[in-house]
Structures are given as structure tokens and as C-alpha cells.
Image 1: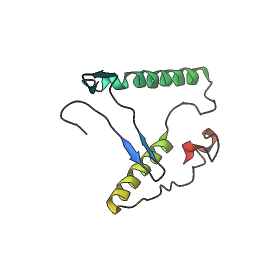
Image 2 (image 1 turned 90 degrees about the vertical axis):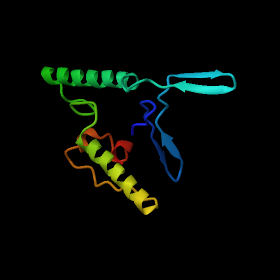
Image 3 (image 1 turned 135 degrees about the vertical axis):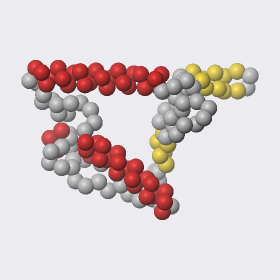
Image 4 (image 1 turned 30 degrees about the horizontal axis):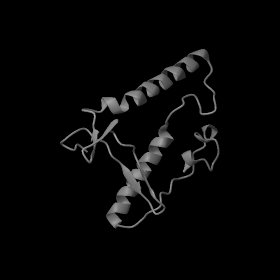
Length: 130
């Protein structure tokens, strides 16, 4: 959401056993005059620059492996998210909305990992598969 005062991204998921949240966007915390303040970046680029660089490098590495014929590794031809990850993200988001609408916890119940994706999952109990 746009906050109106600065570009800020926040996310916290509250569960029955605890919470998880994204780290703060502020890179500098100032303590002075009995106050604590954080400076927010003016836009998204500062927060995501390193992630975009790593993502691009992963893609370049995958193209290099593909061109050399070395497309097999322990995570598949590309080390990154795939369509199965997108399905799970959409399923979690849909379940969260349903839980909010009903005002009650609802378990996320994904279907079994399709055979297409099984070779690249370390094990069926891996957290990536839940």
C-alpha cells in the first residue's frame, strides 16, 4: 500500500505459535534527545537493489549453465522460484483473505507436489514443499 508519507513496505503474519515480519526498511536508526527515529528511503530502489542484483546474477548463471549444457544441479536448471512457488504464494494469500473474512484460523492445504517439480525438491518434508 502507498502510505502517503514515504515508500514503506511492511508485512507481518500473526499465527497461533508466533509472528513473522519483514525487516524494517530503515537503514539508519538515530537515538538522540530521548527519541529514536528511522530514516526511510525515498523510493523502492534502495531497499531492493541488492535483491535485484542477485536475481539478475542468478538468471545470468542459469543462462550460462544452459549454454554450456550443464543444466542439471541440485535445484534444477534455474536456482530460483518456479510456477509451484507461485501457486503456493497464491494459495497462502487466498487462505489469508478467507481467514480474515471468516475471522478464524484456516490451515493452508496445498495439493501434493506434482511429479514435474519433485526432482528439484530435496525431500517431501522440506519446508519449500509445504
